Image 1 (cartoon, rainbow over the protein chains, first blue to last red):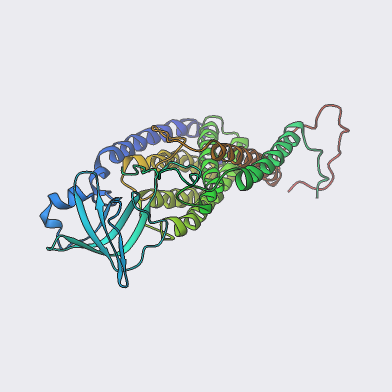
Image 2 (cartoon, rainbow over the protein chains, first blue to last red):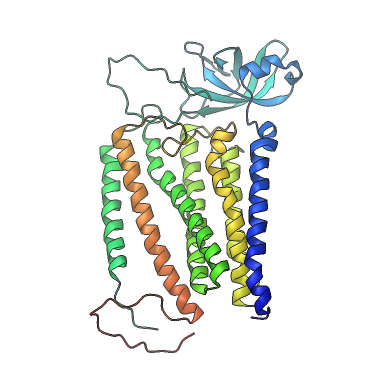
Amino acid sequence: MTVPDTVRRRAPWRLLTLAVVVLAAVGVLAATGLQGSLVYYKTTSELLADPSLQGERLRLGGLVVPASVSRGPDGVSFVLTDGVQEVRVVNSEQPRGVFTEGQGALVEGIFGADGVFRSDLLLVKHGNEYKAPEEPGEPPAVKDVSR
Amino acid sequence: MNPPRPPGLLDRTLTAGAALTSAAALVVALAVAPPDALQGQAQRLMYVHVPAAWLAYACFAVVLVASVAYLLRRDLRWDRRAQAAGELGVGMTALAIVLGSLWGRPVWGTWWVWDPRLVTTVVLLLVYAGYLSVRGLGDDRATGARRAAAVGILGFVNVPVVHFSVVWWRTLHQPATVLSPDPAPMDGRMALALLLSVLAFSLAGWLVVRRRVRILAERDGGPAPQEPPPGAPLVVRAGTRS
């Protein structure tokens, strides 16, 4: 040990004080500062409320409206909703993942002036509920996975 | 080499517990629990992905406590506990990322997204990889241990950030089902499989950390922390101390 004994005894309290300060700073940052900048995707309402988002490449998330899905040779078309506003999406590729009507989906692309969101990346957002497949004959349940 | 010591009662209990819970978890996760209604068979990756993440959190909590204890007591035994837990925690974080990626491809449709949960987890991995490397930078053993303890304490800030990233920010990753401010329903057989696998990971992890602490103690040349069980024949340790 090259450090004098007195210095060695004081050091942990300096470090612990530093730890508390850093902890508080990160906590405040996480709670306030990052709130606005870490939005991973926009909701349909947010997209429609902000005209400046037109033509920008962004991510849009929501629930796939049941019976709105139509698959063609050059992609898939469906309507996303956040329960308030609906946006028609045309994705240039067939969906991967467990894409299902009534479930969450997230697309990356550009919202055009014609009110259609054209995307080239389609991801599936599933909920945190886990259950066994239903017995045949039961009506399919629609889960709310929007957050 | 030193002759192997007879394992203590705790180690034998941990070994038996880990073996039993692993076997039970395997059976329940693969045979008893149903596939998920939406995700199908891929959902079974939960029974290894979630325990890996949980064990990583637990390891980093041990690093935190042992680092504080080291700074207060300046006893290298605490540093060795912190290091052993930190090593397992880094491994488990990496495992959780890889298993999550394997789960994401069939279910989300992608191996990777720059989503807050995934990004904060990578930051967690880097911070604790740094924790393991910083201890080698010091001039002597105690300096390295002191610096590592500081990183081990500060680094823990990341753990709640990772865990609550799915609550604080919009993510592609779904929120937690069990350890959540707003728990969601889960099929009972699935919950049992998850509980058993979390137990199996925890017991096995505890055992691994204990063994690693013993190896680190021998490397430090200190006395082995474990006393032979009462009644066991006294083993005379041959060989030189490193």
